[in-house]
Length: 181
Image (cartoon, rainbow, N blue to C red; front, side, top):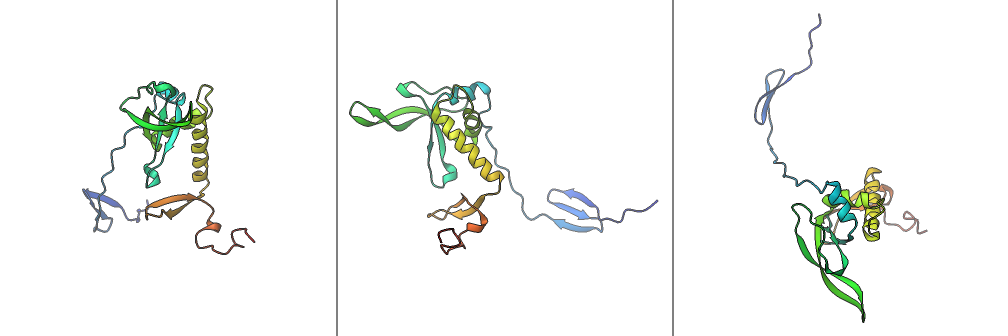
């Protein structure tokens, strides 16, 4: 019988453990995991929101932007559990050109809107604006999956991600390197 000589890790208590040879390891940092509210996942809610018009409401930093779901004609948006309607100003065609109209809308963080958007792009009864934002969301997910998101900074020094290729990063400054011969 052979003896296992690999070091063993034994947990002593919160934030402290020993390595096989009695060397104590101390964890210096404990992080609390923020409670995440579950995204809208009910198929009925997804179907109702997909029939609405959707628009991206930008914010700074961009990751705090939201997706607004609204219906024309002043009728309220569908009732979504734990979400309340907010007023949203939209530009619509009117009798004398384009008019600014306030409509009730359900605003969701992008992460909560993703299930709606990704399904709306292929749903038969989805509004074309929601299907468009769904296609954009799927494209963004494909960029992330292919590793084509690069870190960057906004003009206000917020961390942000941008689409690109490592070859064309900020360090590449000459026109010939960017294909501008």
